[in-house]
Length: 231
Picture 1 (tube, rainbow, N blue to C red):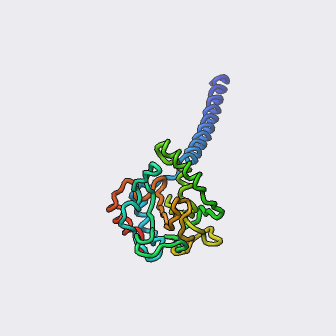
Picture 2 (picture 1 turned 30 degrees about the vertical axis):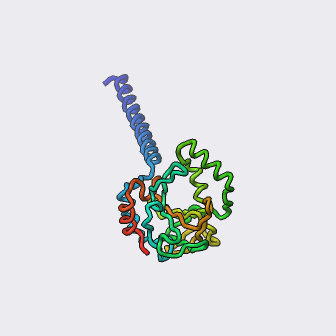
Picture 3 (picture 1 turned 120 degrees about the vertical axis):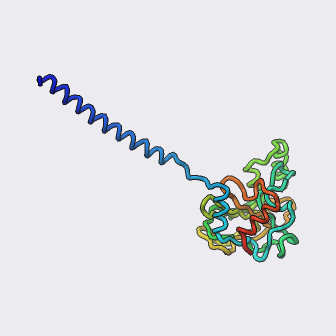
């Protein structure tokens, strides 16, 4: 074989080795990028319910039960703000126990505090009415407005995208932060954020971006609660 032929062959081998190394590097980068771009998978509805059942959760008011009044259940209409109710209301005379200003509120299961409105200042009546006027003009309730209307709040994350919200509180347990255990007193019933200031607990179970009970009938909601919440 002539010298020129050997030079050509050796050059081709070097090029091939070089190309293979670069391709390998690119594949490795692409795989890493794909891993970083994959979001945490949101559970299906059935998976959320299974996770809730395994939590061994209790009701947020000791001795209470879920009301039979359909207007106090999730997905009930809230015409005054062009929206729907997103949780369960515990009012005196509707849940089997006395509810008054200062009634203790319990963490329904083990979890971690992710929001505590310690320095909450209640909304002025004029501002509240202005927000509701805007809502009526829009035809729906913006999330920011709904958050204000929920008053003083505590939120607990229970993992798997499940969060419980405890709203309209009069005050919050001193030093509340970090991990909480099922049955811990996290706050006290009040009427913050409401027009009437009638003491009650508005309690939500959030499943990712939605709330438990969305699109369900009152009967379905009650049957579901029997499976996931204990007295």
